[in-house]
Length: 154
Image (cartoon, rainbow, N blue to C red; front, side, top):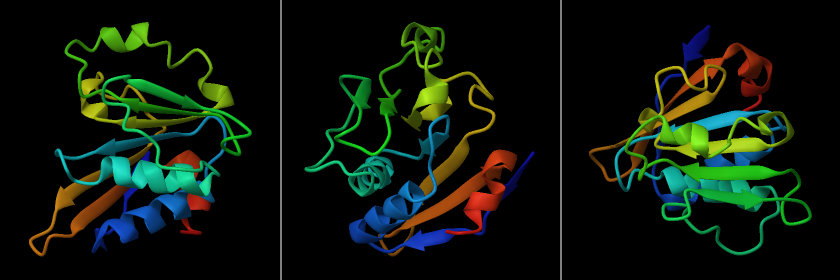
């Protein structure tokens, strides 16, 4: 059971970074965050803001070609897998990535989650981005039960 937030407006890339940093204060191993939206909507910007707030020095590369980009302490305060499913053509390929093998021990950030089967991550904090007419980004979030208490702190 989830609830949807009212849309938030991210006016510029710095706002995306700040939103990612706010998420970093809430995450723990075993969490899944999905980032959906069209190309250029700011999915990777939010992920980069989150990773920077977790301690990553320098800009995180987009995992578009690697598909899975791992991070671990001491580079980040907890283990993270940053995943980009854009190049996945068949949802069955996702099982080959081994994402579920150690999900309890790390944070999973997934861009392009719509490439996975429906409800593949039922307890994910599901973030959707769209382009706003003024050039900013409109963000909505589906907040699942495991996130409810933490979400109230954002």
